[in-house]
Length: 289
Length: 289
DNA sequence: GATCCAGCATAAGCTCAGCTTAAGGTCGAG
DNA sequence: CTCGACCTTAAGCTGAGCTTATGCTGGATC
Image 1 (tube, protein in one colour):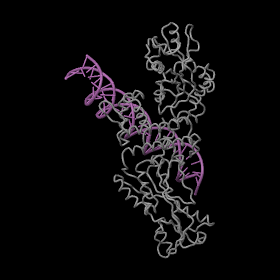
Image 2 (image 1 turned 90 degrees about the vertical axis):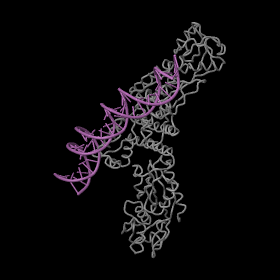
Image 3 (image 1 turned 120 degrees about the vertical axis):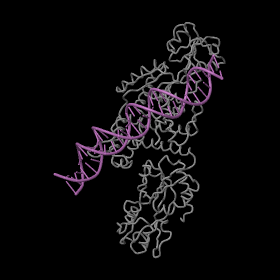
Image 4 (image 1 turned 60 degrees about the horizontal axis):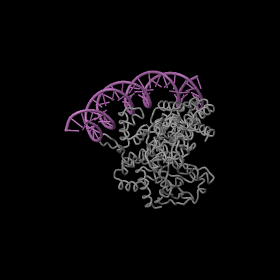
């Protein structure tokens, strides 16, 4: 019988590309991953990996098996979720990931509502950029996460991740009437690698220029303070700009940011996940949107 | 992560009822099965088995998990079948089960056609009564089997077995114009426990009497010889009565017997299974139906 | 072209999951 | 009351699978 643990390694390899990266993701040594994949190949009776020099690539049969690995692992996830439901109401640790604004604005009311409704639940929050959420969910480091996606940034489609939309909010530009009008201004963006950074760059590119990025700041409160100090312009989401500092004017852009809940596919029926998503929805109704 | 091997044991327990029977089916000791199920229960975090004295029964949570076990094991079966397809054409051993008449009439032409089309395939045939096929398939002792079902006998529905209809044939009664006319005759049936035996009993019950069974004989050739010798009446399928001995008259009954191919769910795309079923279909076209 | 290093594979050893055998408890049938 | 069927627990052993150590290959860098 095929071993789901080996299938999981193969799936990670398909996504990460190198055995070393897989090993790091599952906190094994590369040697262990190599041995497991070799064993899987032996059982499969058909080459799954092609070794070309110091790199490995999946064969067509390997890709085929990855598709089936998704299906198998999703069914196992469903089974686990069903068991969690059978154990009774939501309880135990629940690892929650959230981008900074959500952690500040949405999570406090959501968590109080969640723990009030389910005292046995112990939510554990980690701030995490949406770009890293898929990997963290797959690795089991998170159970549910708040992510966002922008008009300009295509959403991460991951066959093993499922999302549920929560709400949408408009974006604002500081001190300028339009993005195009900020062509020659210094910009304040999030750090490279974050989704917000990509969004700002893409928005400027759509307006026909490359932004002159002077500051890299993740916290929108600090961003607005910098803007108020004349250090540059920035694009900020509605929820981060509820109470702008004096001297900063905000212009609504024809851009929106959508916030979603993400979790492993098949895990949506897990009572703790259901409860968390429900708590998110409830908390949203009290948000000043 | 849930272990599919443990899930398989739980599924077998749901079907067989006792740990000892499961152990026999998978050729483990009962101790090993007990330990594995205990471990599964521990991982599940919820009681799956209820021990009442010397017997065990599944809890509702146990039954729930069995449903998910079906889904998981089916997906694994699909993955294996896909790998077999990736290995290339059908090859290797193929364990075929068949009831006696099929083994005699259908298999010889089907096997010659099969091995001619796929020289790498090594079919290994075992005669087996349809009543035992499900267990043998699940246990991996067979890959594909020829089974039949009668009008009077409800088909065995097994969540992990899939069937494909092959053909249907009429049934005949020896030396009497109707089943009701054989009320006081001695009967020749298959051995108790076989599907054919059940069919004969049910047919008589439907005609309003309990048959007086004198002989238990599985081979229909022998049955017809006995009938010719005046030893009793019998119900025989068309394919077993192509060449009746002198002195036996056959009356067609408003009964039919359907022959099907059976295999593990999810395994239908296995190239060897596909090839075998195709060969069955081809062989049928040459059958004198 | 020499050097470095990132990446993978293999060898050797060790730990633990999971099997077996052995022994004991429980309940129903005769 | 005894026997037998059934399950569990204890103890021991084997092998799968992990780690560490080592070696090989090929691309990047100077």
